[in-house]
Amino acid sequence: AQTVTQSQPEMSVQEAETVTLSCTYDTSESDYYLFWYKQPPSRQMILVIRQEAYKQQNATENRFSVNFQKAAKSFSLKISDSQLGDAAMYFCAYRSGWRDDKIIFGKGTRLHILP
Amino acid sequence: SAVISQKPSRDICQRGTSLTIQCQVDSQVTMMFWYRQQPGQSLTLIATANQGSEATYESGFVIDKFPISRPNLTFSTLTVSNMSPEDSSIYLCSVARSRYQETQYFGPGTRLLVL
Image 1: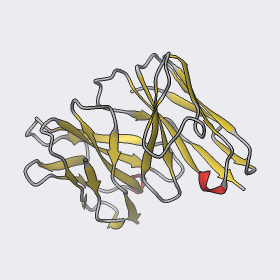
Image 2: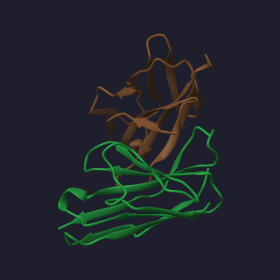
Image 3: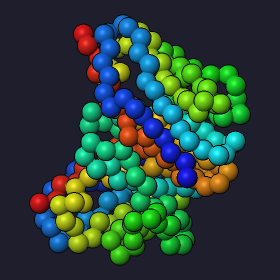
């Protein structure tokens, strides 16, 4: 069975600095998708970024980028120029490319932004 | 993306009672899902709501406790039956436009407290 591991329950970063959130996963599949979701306090969960496993190029969305290491089964999220609005719980997630529709979530990393 | 609303946004209920949560999407979607997020925890899939047929439940979740309806392609309900304090959680609806669309979009969630 697939698993997603986020080893950092909490992290803090100074405003305007860069922070990297770690995620590792385990799968025997070759076709899959990886996601980072953001859940601000008492607010809606939103998709930050996604990566298709068949693409070697790392996905980027403005200040958010990933470091996708397929062989190492690692999928870290880098947030550049951190802003107060980035404070949230971040979930790494995995979805099989073909087997079923279920998304498997990691336990999350709570990110604090220090002014 | 899709615009998803949930009702109620929050509720406080007495043990032994039932609560029905509604999920409404602004456009037709093929896939609708219900998740539970216990306090400080990650998301766990309860079931996939299938239009025109019975929901598909994940291990540990049963229809008698969490009956689900999906009368059309824009609406679903989840009922939490015979509630106990252990059912206190956030319940989230998510959607995907098609079975093969890998990205799920989430509703704002329903915060449930059972006394």
